[in-house]
Image 1: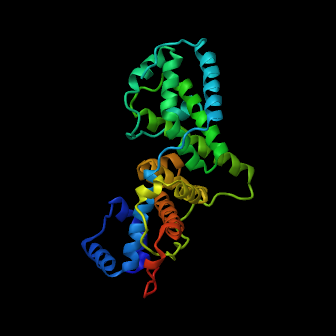
Image 2: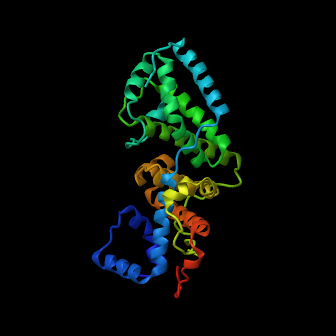
Image 3: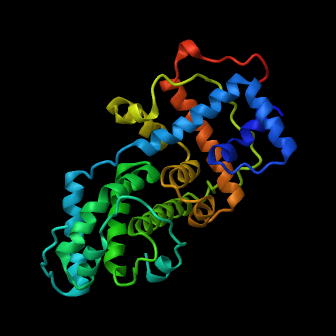
Length: 90
Length: 220
């Protein structure tokens, strides 16, 4: 197996969906065990995904939040006719 | 988004951070705007962040966020909780972003989308090095965060969409294909290209140059 061939299987490996024959699996494992660059590339990709998953959500800009709630209030009145105030404390 | 669009959305999978919304939803369905507002305030950071990452810019993200919650007003009584609300809204937001892209593509008729990604060769990894810090640490640093989001925003939109839906939001490959209107194999190819492009870019920022690995054979 070449590095290019291994690269094309990285998705399946990172996602845990590797569906190979026993022989292909052995070739994959052998290549990875002997090829430090491929090991690092696989690790980099895993960390890239973790990085984006670890990020906190962006706060909504305050002017957008005001505009959003105003637009929702207008649409609500159009749809339901009035604004009913309850006890939304959750 | 019309009623048919919403009903045709694929089945959603569970998503996090929407605990205990059901009582608020029940009150909102009776016309209680305060309850509805509480739902919006709770979910808007996730929807806005998703829209910003998928759309790649603030203006579209704002528009998509607003359209998504307006769709919730329109379809509040149709949503019956078969899928988690956040996941349901993420799909609406994804459809909105996709609609914007289709609209712009039609305006640029001379530049049709390239939908087949399978033939082109993969970009060969150039800068290969272990990262200096853990992803969790990097994600907390403001300077890193700017670089991370910039790298994503600069990906071609078709690759960015596959990465955001599949890798960040956790939709399955099949669900991602359904949302984007492309085949499963094409999702996989786009995802691979997105991962490789982001890896290359981020490793240049976060990789340790002193531990850079230079292949002693033809790597690629």
